[in-house]
Length: 252
Image (cartoon, rainbow, N blue to C red; front, top):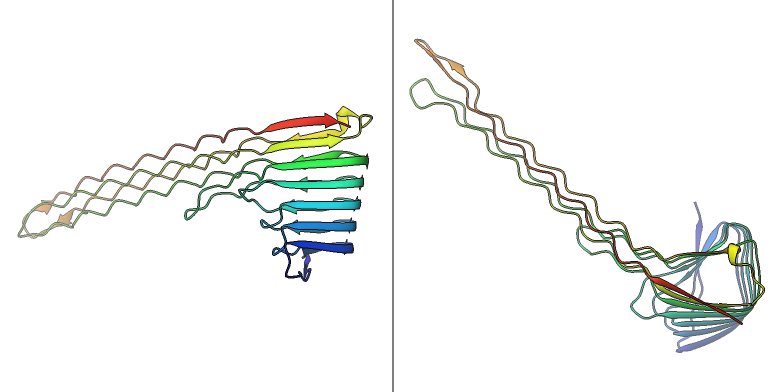
């Protein structure tokens, strides 16, 4: 399990730091009370993760290095973010992740965060950016129908079971991001992998089960019939896929 480290923030909308290093297999969070960060060196070691919070809108870096399977993860937010590096070096399996958040029963899915990236010089096994929308919230499960009342020997027949409730529909997935990338003219096209798909629709809610009818009962002179079972509900419909984002690539 990855360790959690917190980078201490300065009380200013602008923060300048000489060097930020994320150790292997650890998570570091940048300060969230500064909207603009300027770093001379940012290094995320193998399997490390740097988390950029929602309050940060611009990060300028002189030297950026991502190790094997390293991550820069950008928290979803309404405001776009710009990340610029004079020199960037990305190891195999590294990635910039700006995915939206999945929906829950309490909150809808969140779209991916729009971002603008600029790398004046770039060395990378692959430039991988994941800016897909969040998965839609699942539909509510339908309630089961109640069981019918048992009959009595001196009154009425058995009660019928009640119908199960229909499951709720899954919610629509959130939209993918608008991504703009500026990179050197000689960086190969086949090494660029950017995903801006809309989030998948939420799963449908399951149907409520039918209630059982009241069970038959033997009496002294006769036997009462059992009640009919109710009908099961219908499963909900899956949510629609969110709208796809767009990618713009500008060669320097």
